[in-house]
Amino acid sequence: MYRWLFLAAVWINSCSCQYIHDDPSDTTWAVQPDLTYDELITNGFEVPPIADSVTEVKPGLNYIVKLDCLGCPFDVRGTYIWDQYEQPGRPNSLLFNFTLSRNQLSLLLNGESIFPLRQRRSGLQAYQVEANASAGLLQNIINHEMLDESWKLGTRFGTYDISFDATLQSEAGPRQTHLMFDIVGMSYTHQTKRHDYILDAHDQRIIWLVLQREEYRPKMKIEDIQLLSRCDFLSKHSENLCGNIRKSLVKSKSRAWRVSFRVWEWDYYGKLGTVSHGWHFFWSNFWYCFNVAVVPVGFVVCLVLTLLGTRRLVTRLKRLSRRLWTRQRDDGEVREVDGVSGTDTPKSVQGDMATPAEVKQQV
Image (tube, rainbow, N blue to C red; front, side, top):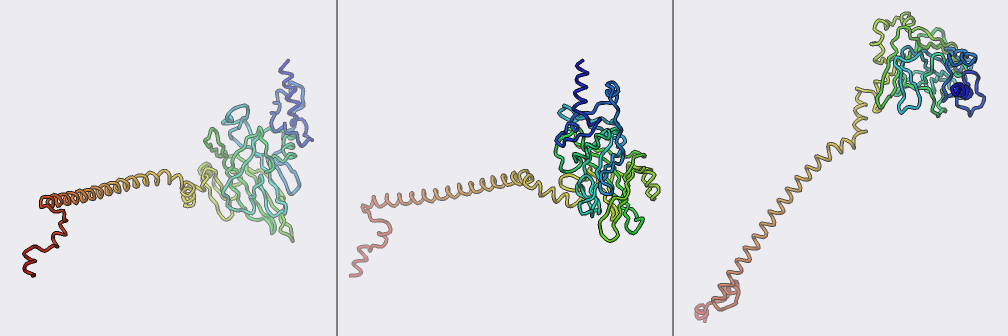
């Protein structure tokens, strides 16, 4: 009985699989898990339709792509200290929000500009959902703008850093631009360690976009968006990468017509193996290096200088004390001689006085 009550409560609080939330403040769909297929059938609920691979939000301006991630690990979030990852995971997909900027001059992906092409120093992030995510769930994500930067709440959906290739293909017309977006890898951090997964499946799909510019204005719109097989597409464009696809995807190859980014080639200080990376690493860790290397050496130098200075000071004090002792000894001997002769005249005065014979001779 308690199990049925629990399932009923979950169904009431997690109705994203049945209908679309109208209350903008209701975000339980982003936290509570959906009912499974067996639970829906057992309780007599209608099985919701699965979300399409490409969902149109605003014609020509905004599209949501649900890209199947073949063999990718799946983030099982629950009441754990660390997220639990299934690898290989259950069938899952990554969500990508393609939208044009307000002035319609650039193309954004999950809030980051990807066209016009510019070399990137940071990757992109994408949410992960199950491959059979319902259309109602996707509509809730769209209505609440979960794929936008304004979303700050935690969810039951895992997030991954994406490695990608964005390639500009030959133009089919005077105002058309073809853009290929290939997800080549995903990275996540588990127990303070980064894990990388390369999407090297031969039937992995890529995203193909056609951008159409207006005739007399630089504004553009999304004319078409499709999901194509990677190997079929590359073989048609004379890129023989499917022979050893994993090797071809590991290293980034940026060109004038391609922006290539790999998460594992970058860290906090920049791209690994470059001069700028070493420079930033040195200056960022300057004080650490100073404390580790310079301070001990400086301490030893100061200690040696202190010992040498102390030794020199002691030597000078010994010499001064010896001189004072010698002078006192000589003064004591002079006074002792004067006492025997019966006069207290100092030796220096006695040397200046004339003898009686010299006095008679002067007279």
